[in-house]
Image (cartoon, rainbow, N blue to C red; front, side, top):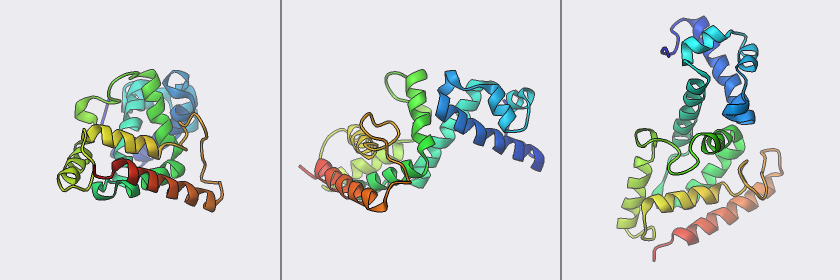
Length: 195
């Protein structure tokens, strides 16, 4: 696998492959995604894809790890207000449902148990430290910081594309989203309130 291309034309092709493959993997997963559809949609060829990513799995990993970094940057944790963080995650799932779909496919097809990614790639150290500090300050209930983080994230995904009850979309009425945000905010506050 090579680094991202340096020429403008190569960089444009690289971005098209990432964009098309993100949609393909989000819709079909790793097993169902087709390299032929990706290269056709990106207006390139298999040789170019393999030169940049090494394999279909390498392409999925590049997209998946990029999505993890994106969600960390778009919705950084504020452990002093985990309820607000949950709402910001909810909003990001509405804006970018592919993020959560990619994580779901990774869970189903690659990591059915344990952490979704290996320790060096987890990107949750900052979150866990922030929660531990909020616990020390008496702002968040006691308990394993990882379990609290997992609980808040799960609550934020209640209406996401992985919900087995109802998957919300950004096209729904604003008042419906406001009602859900209020319920989510209140529920997370109660769940993480100091003991």
